[in-house]
Image 1 (cartoon, rainbow, N blue to C red):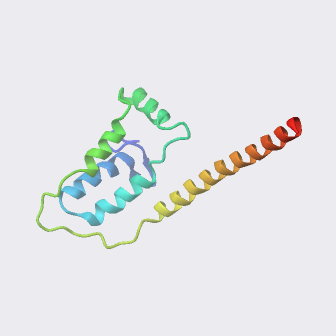
Image 2 (cartoon, helix red, strand yellow):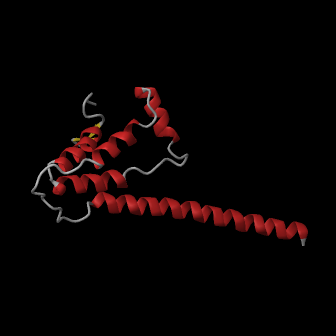
Image 3 (cartoon, rainbow, N blue to C red):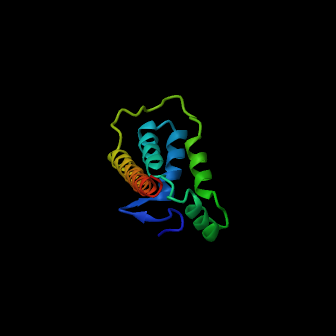
Length: 130
């Protein structure tokens, strides 16, 4: 944990990466900003209770419920200030696919549990009233 870069995992700082998006955008380095943006969007899945838990963490830490969202919005909306732009020609980062599979898996699990509960309730209802 570093005060300027936030939590650091596997040599990557979450806050430093978020502000790196804005820095790369402003100097026309889309080859750096696009993969960081794709990863930030892929990893910003809300908790099952919506955004309540992250907001509570923000209130406790810095007395602001939306500091992270505001910082990402600021970074992702930085205008390009140079004449020459380095385009992004790479592939979609692997974490984007991993997170998509995880989101779909969890969503399908919840849908399956609901369908199972409805079938169970329907069988119980049929026995009682028919």
